[in-house]
Image (tube, rainbow over all chains, first blue to last red):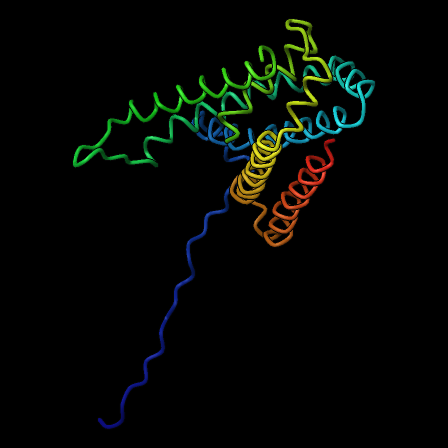
Length: 138
Length: 98
């Protein structure tokens, strides 16, 4: 037999099982994951709310009072209440993930995860105290 | 940044003041606080980082969650473009504070 065999690469089709759009409803852990991701929507809403407050304060005292009146309307209150839960969820899940992302060493010893997590909560308390003092007490 | 600052700001301006649990700060006091350069800088940082946090997470939620892979470019431009636009608006509004 003479001649050289020519081989062609054979690529089998990839096995791609179609994934349902509602895959996140199949398990509680999936739903928890999507809810955590959805918390970003309420973060964006609060940025808009904050900028509306800044604009109202910048314009005049009347605008500020009108903004406070508008923020007391049932729809806005409900939206802010829901936002509070989602922003709380965002903060808690972020603090839970932080020790896994931040591996802190002091010298050659690794700082325990619970210490890193606790530091985040203390930071939240400190930041909240400072903001509340500036707005209410100073 | 949003995890540290947003909870207290939301509790105060979103719930406590509108519901009357606490007396809202006087306009003059709030304007004085807002006028301070450090406050403007902190608020701008909060808005910028929060908007990009939203853009990134929302983009991936649509991509992974709702499996909208075929609109990836449109979603990316809309999300990050929206974040940039929001940051520019935040910079303008904070610059305009008297």
